[in-house]
Length: 418
Image (tube, rainbow, N blue to C red; front, side, top):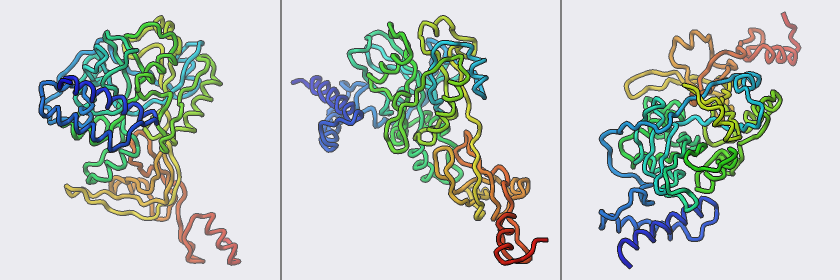
């Protein structure tokens, strides 16, 4: 067997075993997989001219880039129009046929180009017309297939989706950073990671990719067919989105586009499940299901006419302000941090929140012992946004608490209210 045959066989076997592992059907142990992987790495180090840029070893990254070339999109990557209510979804979309609802992932849009079934280009959305060529970094993302199956056409196809960072990975990353360097949210972390000049650092941050658009394959009648085709190629799609317990969950719902009731139910359903998801979403996307109807509706200058986004309002919950600590940043910046009674907010357990500075504390008029409202919208680092119920000290009992608590204490002690 030639060296070239060794390369091809090892690469093929590694891709196959990686796919089986993803499907939960491994045929070899992790140790056996690692041994095969190291053998391929050794061959590539010895015979550098034979290395395939889409080799399984591309997942670990490579030395620094000097810059990211600019690439013009073959087809513009548009933004989405927004709606804030179920009725606005119905009115703005203006479509009465079947539509799908799926999570609006809060990450970084990417376009992947395959030629001869191999990944040849990965480009960020940029301004919609031109983006950055981040192919070397995209190759490190394990949920981006480097080579497609024989089912895929050998001609040029494009897969679009969102690169994102799971909550679990984000929290691990931020815990290792100084306060001044922490990312505000997983979206910023994903975008910052994708722009790193050293793809080995990108690989270490464990980004994921969720695909939801396929351009260049014919005979796809419905959006559900498109998602199943992407699943067949080992892409992660909204059909099976990761939960915090790693159990797959389908987050795609189907209903009538002109129905207020369907829209309201879909919005409620997404709000109910979004805290169980292990990735950030800031709403849901409503899309026309029939691909022929999509083509007839076409694209506007800024947004497609066959899709619209519903944006979640900022999530707020009340909790007890137990204490305030002052964090000192690397550059000497002082930031007051609220220490809270733990509350579950937007997919994570929150027990600390930013209070920004002394001026913000004065504006809020907040004090230790108050019940405060905590908000976490696009910013994954929560903030205290208002006082929900003040804490007082009762001069008669010496107890501290809310008005209701103090009145109850007086009653228990037989003290008359003034």
